[in-house]
Length: 627
Ligand SMILES: O=C(O)c1ccc(O)c(O)c1
Ligand SMILES: [Mg+2]
Image 1 (cartoon, rainbow, N blue to C red):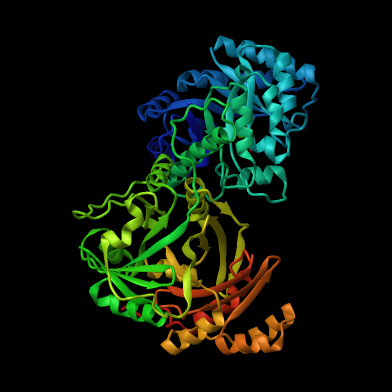
Image 2 (tube, protein in one colour):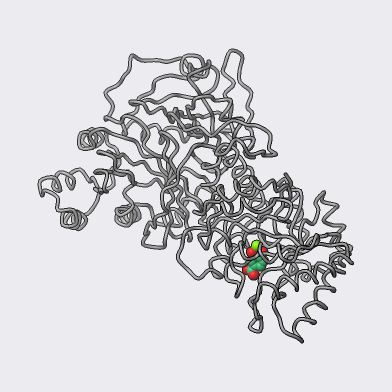
């Protein structure tokens, strides 16, 4: 199946867009007339530029306000169409999109519109081009693909077909299965776009908030299945009007687009195996069974600070890598690695970001399959030489440049600790009652959040929670939780540098993991053990406890215990949640320890404003040197 993307989906000039689109693996582009007009090249030159990038022009668009007009508008619309057909001949494209009219003089009338299209088909035939009719969901008379299809059916002309756009169908909540009754060869073109579920004016929603399939809340997979069920074999094209993408890096937006297309086709074929989908086979998405380890890259000099922090959190050294300067720190089911290698990927990460999380090891059912699915979905395979007798652990590059390694219990990879490490000490150590890793918080610029959540939801069997606002005293941070099996990740998008999250991005030069939240079965016991070990607990003020007691009607004795231990509280329909924090390191990195009771599903977002304010009060003043 040919893939395509509308030039309007990317930022920059046409040359830059073409390079990004070709680089991401697309076969073609929809050329937006504006992009062509804005370019200083002749139509023939633009056509050649596109083909020089190995691309074709799958569609020329949009042609507006055509059908149902009285004279003299009608004649003018045909004269305009003739000019565009000439242009299309020079560009080297044979399909034009006509979107349904919003013209104030338009009269509607199904047979009048069908007659207009039959005449347009005759004109198109003279130029050896075709036209496709698309129902804009805000069109005056035609705003439903079923009506557009009826116009096309009645026009009954080989040069006139239907164009379907998932946004227009799904935004109006039209059942996409109604597409299954349309003959696939009468569908000339298919556009795909998703969008977040926001209640707003259709036109405004469409022009500003569309996003890639899988990034929003529309059921694009069901739409896709219906398209495939018709036997449609033309291009699948992304048409994404999005304010962020208009200023984003074209290469990344194009890559995410291609990833989303592969993802939606894969979901369609898994949901409906009878469909024929032109996509090579690759492994199904799988959940994460366990976060097996988190690795920090640091240096000999800086390792001391980190190890002091780990010790105060109840971790103990439990082994060393057989050949590399990597130590294993353990507590309960949490394994942390401290890598002081002065060569290789860890060192590169350290040089780029300072002490930083450089790798995350994930246990899945089949490690090779996890890696191969990632690569099929355009993740970069990460290779690093393993020493003799050591495990070759499949890995991909994750978000923010870190590495994700895949382990499983079905192969030798299940013995990573026995094979690659020399374990020491009797263990298990008493520790502070930390039992494992509850979640990993990754920070990024706000406009990278969609890309990051797409990474997880396409490669893993993952679910997104609704986005929540985290109020930093100096700006808003959006937080998107993603869960795959037993791995929870929160993606935090900072809009300004003054937030704690924004400062972390700046100070760590774009590192990704800003905090790790450990799990405890009894946070009060853990808090006492942490205090005894000198863990730098974040102090929470009395005002907070007065409010939380009133808000949830808590037993004052419980509030008093929480206050004494600097434990914060939240609850939802499923259960209760206790959490405590460390002070933030100068670069903004910190630890959290949480206790979930029942089926509490959140992350304590209502507490964030108070926690962040406290962390900012206790952090070193901005502008002080890092080291
Ligand atoms: O917003 C618009 O006008 C517009 C134009 C062309 C399209 O294909 C579309 O889906 C929307
Ligand atoms: Mg469209």
